[in-house]
Length: 343
Image 1 (tube, one colour):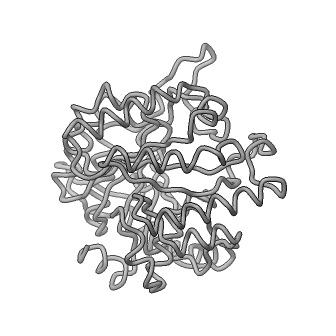
Image 2 (tube, one colour):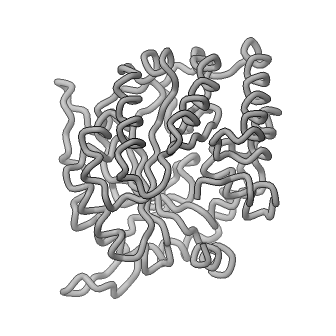
């Protein structure tokens, strides 16, 4: 915590790296375009465009040198990488906390390999929404969540991340009950909203419009009440109330929280705006023993200062809980310091 606070407040840099270690996926979620990048015409998954293990290690080295304290492997589905355990082991060897975001389908099969993963987040929507949005069996995901929570292998409680859409308004509270019953599981919620890079999705069936507004407000009030009653919801009450009231979180502090790098080694200050700032490998120089001579993350970060500033200045606000909660904390919202409780 002290290292992260120094990184964010003193050095004014992000403390978390969110790294796309692949782009292929074993699901075909309707609101996501990431899985399309490595899907072959016959429907099989290609790994030819994924970053090499060597490049991933270089990025971890660059991140540690930059002051990053936490490494988050994500993308379409990181568990498709056979070498994911080695990636996480390498990140741990550099003193980084390790995170992973997964759809959960392969969690039961590979849980025993994930001894170097500190935090695991699983995307779960509810029975109906899982079938209609993720096009897969809800029980297959829940089976993985249950196995992981009962395995005794978790370093920290597993996190269920639930995106609230028009498809699952009647199922979100049940997920909160399920999380509490398991005892070693926490839950985060956030509303669905349009990512700028996902413009091929038919959003009409997913977005929470005027017809669903009353039900959405009722759900958010229920979740706030459950939070007060001790249900394992990691969201702060401040965030839940602002989302309920339709207010995006302003005065963004993404530049002091999360840095993103995609599978092509491009760095992003914000994955919502999705504007690449530069190739961190291309802008780095390594010696014969892979020691860092010129740091691409630092270089790209410094030369894009004005660009990042303008991006934040012109942003209309954020509802993505990963950015929003850290923004509230960086803006000294006292309740968020105590209410946002996963990390």
